[in-house]
Amino acid sequence: MYDTDMLLKEIEKLRNTMSAVALKQGITSLESIALSQELDRLLNIYEQRKKTKVCPQTENR
Image (cartoon, rainbow, N blue to C red; front, top):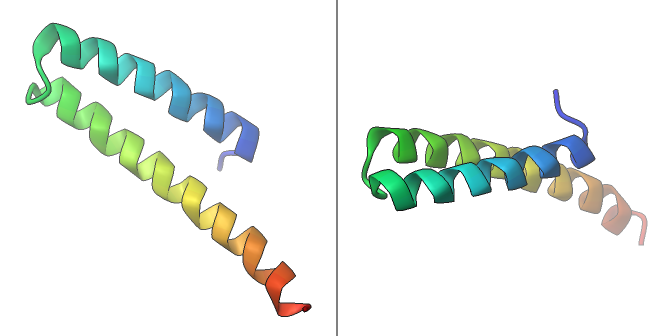
């Protein structure tokens, strides 16, 4: 499992890689699509973590 800082670094790295691949091979290339799907997966993990950290705080109010 990723810690948040590591997750954000991986997201940024993957974004850069995906952009470079998309520029070189096109956004519909299989590699671009695979990278995009992996980026989506990591972003979903990040968003879920943000929700779980915010919800407990709002319950205490």
